[in-house]
Amino acid sequence: MPAPLAAQQDGKPAAAPALPPLPDSAGWGIHVLTAARDAGGALWLGTYGHGLLRLAPGSEAWQVIRHDTAATSLSWDYVHAVAFGPRGEIWYGTVGNGWGLSTDGGRTWRHWGADELGREWEYVAPDGIATRGDTTVIATADGLALTTDDGAHWLAVVDSAGPESLGPADTAIGLLASEYVRRVAPDSRGWLVSTLRGNQRLRHTGVRWEVQPVAAAPYTSTNAILIGRQQFRGTPCGLRPAVDTLPCLRHASKAGDSPKPPLTTWFRRPIDQADNAYIDQTYRYGATMGGNFQQHQGVEFNNPDGTPVFAIGSGTVVYAGRAEQGSLTVAIRHDSTLTLQRRKLAIWSVYYHNGRIDVKKGQRVAAGQRIARVGNTGRATNEHLHLEVHVAPPDSAAAIVDSLERFPPYTTNPELWIAPLPGTGIVAGQVLDAAGRPVPGARIYGLIKPEPRETPFSYAETYGDRAHPHPLYDEQFAVSDVPPGSYVLGTEIGGAKVLRRVTVEAGKLTWVVFKP
Image (tube, rainbow, N blue to C red):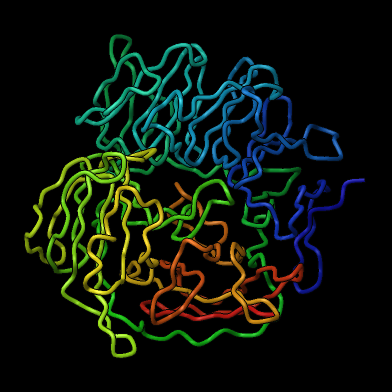
């Protein structure tokens, strides 16, 4: 029989409808990003890394629908949008690999991913698929894609700058305040659209599409659903009653260190807060996004083409031009240095994938000076800034930008060098085995970061052999922009769960060590 999905509060389970447990093989809970119900009453959950979960009426187990080698499977297992059409169509949208459609109840899927979309359109907004009548609207970080014939033809709605590529669309119209769309929802007069530059209503007059500004943000999260008479919400540890607001990890545990000021002065952010200054939470420094990508050598700032890129600190431009696979790249050697064991080290910042460069080699730049514009040149799958911070001997300039080197030898985690967003702090630390050795690829659960929803935070990963710690911290992971508060964090070492309690304060760094 299905086990009741009930939250523990003070040792007593909260009343909840009986639901089968989610198929969680790791024991940390499945991160539910969106929840929806189709016309037949089946529940659908989009998850972080576990694909789609479907519970048919009367079923005692969840059906797991995941990406595999078949061309008709899901394109990607990171799903945060699900919507249904009037003829039984099932649409899904992903974090970073486009969207898909099933017309046979979820048995087979057609998808629009990297091959169909190119270097844009792959980041679907959270809950970013809306349907009404025969029209489906897909909201992405590169504009809206509209279809009235289940994807046989598409119309792209973008900003005045226009798209670099049409993706799947036949034509494009420039109506949006910004192509970076965060939300979409139908209303009685059209489609409400929230972008990086404000909110608009998109409507069709019978002759043409037009927009008008609106004040209210057009968004109600679908990461909540009514089951029986109780509201449930998706959380990092599953589908839970909305009245249960306690954290996923609640156990008593040993405390980490108290928050302290940073050991080095923080640089400024390379993207202004009026744009998208949030770091992509799915592909952090040293991370692999659950083993799907190479160990990351920097951090990402997803923004529309043309967004200004600023120097994080004062210094001299040592490189400005094409680098890896044609990426327009800027490298700055900063005026500030780091002394370690009487050895002076230089600090560089490197900015990749730009659409335009505004500085020249040898030029002096000030902190906050515009040096480039965001683009997707080089080995990029969407429009974004890739930022690296290198710490190396002063004579190492040739190793900082090397188009033939996928894993530069002196990168460090930029999240320990740039200031956290106002009102937030940083958590950093180590995961050690019983012999005191670092554990690579360990996942650290328990931090809650609500923004940016476009790239949801699920867990941090410890560095592998291609990442390098900060010279003064010797950390294995670091996560910035964490809201202040108390958190219980957990990881697995040698098959056993290890928990720690941490406190986060704005403008400070909290250090934590996990070991058996």
